[in-house]
Length: 446
View (spheres, helix red, strand yellow):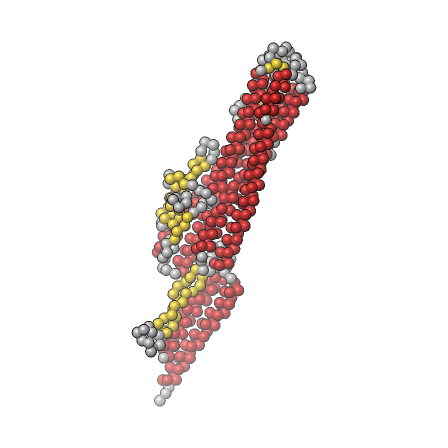
């Protein structure tokens, strides 16, 4: 009996010592990112079964069955899903804000209005040199602001594509690291310290990956090896065991981007890459509308010029060249080139009928109204996406808090566990001492 007591007490001290080590590790890593609280799983050691030896004492101590991670795959999945949605919304808002700044701060709308005002002022005296020079200067300012707006939009697109390219590189890096973790997990002992550390790293990598792309995750039930699929249920595996596929980005002629896995087209609907893609789609649409406005101005003004004569009585020549916002230019050399008079009028004519026709045609084309609509559309999109971003941020934050409450370390509880396991260790040590004293007493009987 004393020897049995010693064996049971020794197993108890071992279990208590392991629990103390795990508790200390929890406290030390309480603020470590990605760390999931551990606990010790204990199992009863029995020398027989009640069915085989119903009158025997079956208890023979306790053994450490393994180390348990306090992880919840559902909550982790929610953090990944909501985090991916929030990352997409944040990236899209950032891109739209840059597009808005590129178009609005260059002053295109104001320059169109000023050019129309210059034509209106010229009606009062079509032979006045300063008024004619003012029209040309305002036209030159208009073309330059359109050039700057186009250049700014191009810069926004370049920045978005560069960031998307970095995101693709990060996805491939994370996929490679996940494949290495999978290989280590397949070799790790079940419920060992090494396995739990690898599982922590796996979950942290999966959460990092969800910031870039939306994923479908499946876990091997025994080893924890993960399979990551992009593109929804019918998508392509990015990581499968120790193998990976390479994510690649392609740029279309209009600057929009698409993705593929080892050549297989892949749709990405959440994460930063999706947000960058949506922003680039908006940038391409905005650039096309800006080009249309510039082309409209060039076509309308040059057509009106061709129908009249300039101050010297010569047939009107184009004021603008170019086909879009990037290449529109004021090409007239001086103010006399503005064809204010109708065809057939002589030099220094004060007949403004062609100028009125030019203004009417420009009013009908309404580039200022189109520009105002463009700016309003972008501003509305930014405002709407901000609301969406804030809502998704709140949802993602709630999911993170729920996961932290479930899987994080509670220092108060760990302090209680330290005392409890220390007392258990001391109690088992005392049992060993008592068993030794009993054994000595028996030996001393004569």
